[in-house]
Image 1 (cartoon, rainbow, N blue to C red):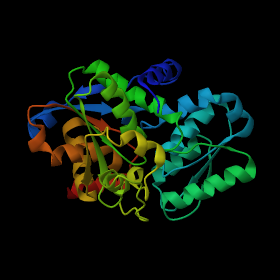
Image 2: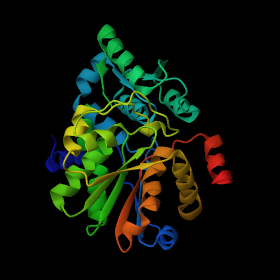
Image 3: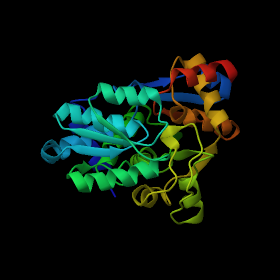
Image 4: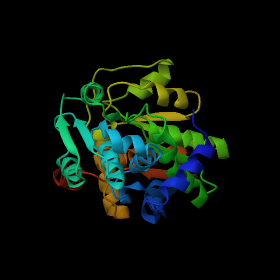
Length: 318
């Protein structure tokens, strides 16, 4: 279990390489939903997603070993870019294993960062198993997207920025794929002010963490049926589950249609481009609007890597 002090230490490290992202009050979304909406714009990171914070921190802490061995990770996109970006910073080889059908935008971004890409399996978990075997076979340093403890303090720096910019925040809504974002949220907010509510969001077609928290045990669904690549995990993992259990206030499920609608609202009312996982928090806020009246609500816009075709579909049909 990492602590708030670890998050402060991580900020000292990554602030040399990543700038603070803005927390923006949205007058239009606030008027539309009936409560104060603040958008944390992690889609403005150099990789267009929050995970780069964890990747940079990991690479700087394990720099010598990473440069010597090279890095390998499995990802549907944003964790991959995080490790590729960090590897480029320190001059390390980076291998990324991805399932088939990942967004073309994310694949091209990885190529631009110089990563070697291996496609394996139809879902994230199949790519993950293959990456772990490849790491053993080739002696690469494996970076698990959810069970690697060093990622969490780096990711938590985004929540540290939120509470510094808005100390009287009432509710923070954060998507849950593997769980590093939501896990770091509960550590930061509950350490500073336990009354701040943290709400997680999963896709209806990939509810492993939602089910795990409901049942009090790790659940594997064996499927991930969602357009939200960042939420498409078929099982819950030990580290985030141990942190979230008993600390997160609620987890909401949203449909693909609700995420597409939220993508459109972010574009039209806030001028922001989000991928489905990056819009999941707004989709949840729209679903919970009657419970959030009169609150100051932070919506984490966690990523903006979306295929142009899907973005146009959201704008035209929702």
